[in-house]
Image 1 (tube, rainbow, N blue to C red):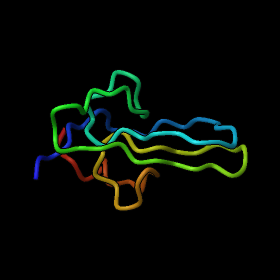
Image 2: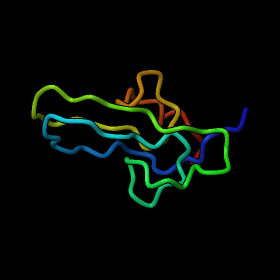
Image 3: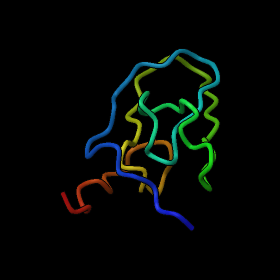
Length: 80
């Protein structure tokens, strides 16, 4: 399987309203941390997120989190 591109080495902290979002899994999106369709032609598909309450979330941009789409600090272990 292909490895995702590291889009960033820190999470994006963002307040999200309740609703449906698509988190980028490939790292190619120009609309990080959300999908913009750049995965087309790769083996990646975006991850559907369903938010039930408005609050701040720390969304992963390194794409190697063990708790997608949330940041778990894995970016600190990646080579810069």
